[in-house]
Each structure stands twice: as structure tokens, then as C-alpha cells.
Image (cartoon, rainbow, N blue to C red; front, side, top):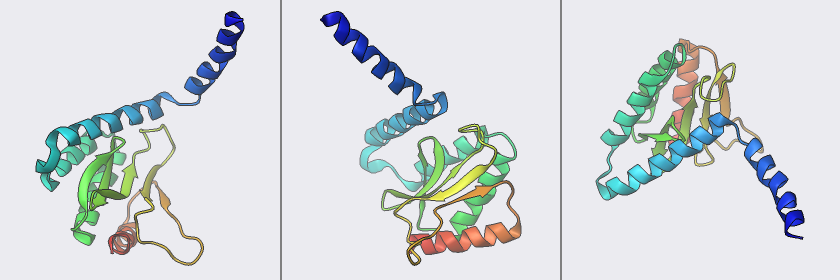
Length: 157
């Protein structure tokens, strides 16, 4: 009877582990490290700590994602200076009162064909019964920067 129980459990365990990609597993591990680091810092954590970690993560990115992340950082700082830069699942993110409002996901992170700029449910973007929460990015022109700046400003309000 024990053999039957073991064989019944094995496929479920294997199936669960196959459902998470290596990239997703890596993001979860990064999140655990972020939480541990924040717990160690405790109340002495400040905006500068988050920004230096974010800038280091951006520096690790490959082009063209690195250039987009650098420009996004500048646009977000200018449009919503109250947001605090930090890492979130190993991605550059910006938080208000400790809660992530928006984030940048490089195309390399999950091996996708485009980068993503997204908003969490903490973002104040509600408009009617339906509104976008993430945008695909292949390049940043002045038009996209202006649109993102306006969205981030609205999201933090």
C-alpha cells in the first residue's frame, strides 16, 4: 500500500516542479533574498539603498533593455519623485509606502520578445470598468516617455 501512495505522490510533485520555469524559480529566489535583506536592514533602510540596488540591477541588463531601464528610471524620478526605487522579484520597481506601484521587466528576464512596463493594483489608474496594467516596450521615444510619465504621475496620486 505504501508503494501505491508513493507512486501517486511522485507524479504530483514532478508535475508541480515542471510548472515553474527556471526563470520564474530564479525570480522567486531573488524575491526571497530581497525580503531577507530588507529584514536585516530593518528601519534603517532608505531610498538610497533601494536606488543603488536598482541601478546595479539595471547595469547587469543587456542592451536594449539597459537603455530603456535607464531612461524609465529618469522619467519616473522626474514624474513621481515620491516613489521609492527598489527591487521586486529581481526587477526594477518603484514603491509608495512600501508597496510596489510600477515595475520594469526586461525581455531577457523571462526570455520574451519584448520588455514590459507594468503597474500593480496599488497604482491609481482605475478608469471605468477596464484599464491597461502593463505595456510591451520595444523602444522608448519621446512620445512613450511622455505617456509613461503621465501614467506614473497618475498612478502615485
